[in-house]
Structures are given as structure tokens and as C-alpha cells.
Length: 342
Image (cartoon, rainbow, N blue to C red; front, side, top):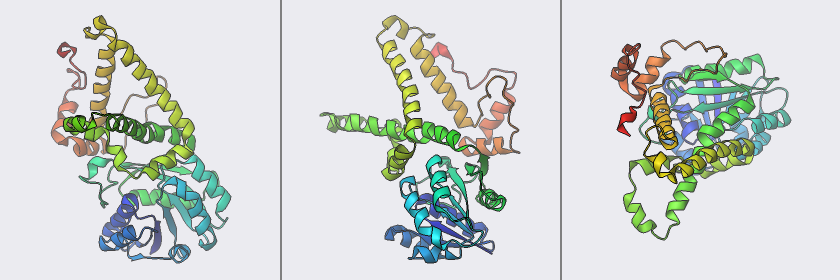
């Protein structure tokens, strides 16, 4: 039986523990550590760990696998603190939302007897109905795996097996590629949500504006329900990628601003604003249906994972919509917007 030590018992860390203890209790002994006393106590209460340790050295000393689930801004200190206590052959991984910095720190700080493999569960929030820990949080979600050139084969295998035990789908990628993608779909949405929330709430009319708040505003501001430390950690370690994607969004916002000033274009169903809105609608629907975008011209198409399409579809919209899309081949594409409505 392997010992897996979870450092950080937030939603991700606790969910990993719950999933392993629920389905693989004969395979893993789950030890938990968190400096936050409330999270420490909750992990024991909800059954996320077999034992919650108060001392970090004790928590990692016998661990076969150590999972660091903290904001990336805390990862340097955590790697430094656990390094002296790791046993021979230990695998260390993480769940942080940026990879270049933590891979560099792992090379600098960890002893040769341990091996680091970067990890990042790309959680599909539709898997659960709340922000509470859940053993089903990772089901059918992608899980980025980012090894170092020096990562041992056994460590990569440990992380790949962990993904399988969580019922997640491992995706192997380069650290820079990971950080760009993560900035686009995690970091920038959080920063945009912060900007929109602050712009509205700093208005002298916020008392009245707040009465108009509905599901759309609540949904787009959802990233700010997360711990700001995670978002700030990404900003500190991934500023170049965030800046790049903010520039891309700024270009589209500029196009929208120009379109709003052209009355004739606004009334044209083929105009620039209509194009932006329709493209956004169509891309959103394809994302919701789990339809993967076509690869760039000339790039090889990846082999689909067995039955993942139907599984992902059923998570979002149920089997009925999946069958509707599947049976529409050769007919009108249901993901194309009818511009006659404009």
C-alpha cells in the first residue's frame, strides 16, 4: 500500500483524498497536512484523509507520493521545507495553475533521491453542483502532466496512475504551453471578472445597479469566488502569458467599441459586432457540447479517447442532445447561429 501525502486540504486537495479513499482505500493510505486549522479539521470530518498530521516533516517522511495543493506563491517555501524529509524514490507533484516556476524550484530545491512531475487538474465544474470538495470532481476532466527532463520513469508513472485513479484524463505538455493555456482560460477570466466587479461596485450607483444583478453577472464573476491567493500566484509567476492574452482581449474590446460607434454597421446582420457575437455564441455552444475545435491546417488530428465524447456530452447536456448532434451529420449544423434573428 502506498502512502500519499496531501499538502494543502482546500477543495482540490480534499477532493483528491476523498476520491482515493472512496475507491482505492486498499491502494493508498492518505495523509493530510494544512496550516489552516479549519481546513485541517474539515478534511478529517468529511473523510478526505486517513490521518491529518500537524507536523509537515512527519506528514512527508514516509510518503511515496507527495501532492502539493497550495497557491503557487507558497510552493517554493513548501518544496524547501519538505526536501530534507523525503525518502528515497519519493514522487513529488503539485496541482498549481502555473508550471514554469515550480519546475525550476523543484530542480533547485529537491534532493536527487526524489523526483518531481508537475500536475494541474483542469476541473470541470459541471461535475459537481457546489464548490465543496467532492470525490467526483475530476471525473472525465483533463489533468495536465508536465514532467521535468530529469523526472524518473517511476514518478511519471505514479502521476499517470493517480490521474487514472481520479478518473481524469492525463494530457502531457510542455511547461510554457501549459502556462499560456492556463493564463487564457483561468487567469484572464479571473482578472476580467475582478475588473468588471470593481467597475460596477465602485460606481456611485452600485446600490441601484446591484438590484439588476442576475445569473449572467453571477456566472461571469464566479472566478472571484476563488481564493485570491491562487489568482495572485498566477500573476506573479505567469505575468508574460497573462499580458499576452489581455492584449488579445483588448483587441476584441477595441473592435466592439468601434462597432458601437457605427450605427449602420450595428444594424447589419453581417457586421463586425454581429460577427463577434455570433462567433462567441457558436464557440460557447461547441464548448458546452464537448465538440473539440478542428486542429490548425496541416496539423495531425489527435486520436479521440475511447467513449470520452459521449461521456463529456452527457455531463453537460445529457444523451439526448448528444444523439441530436450525432444524427445531424450531413444536415443543418445545430451549432451554427441563425443570423436571421439579428
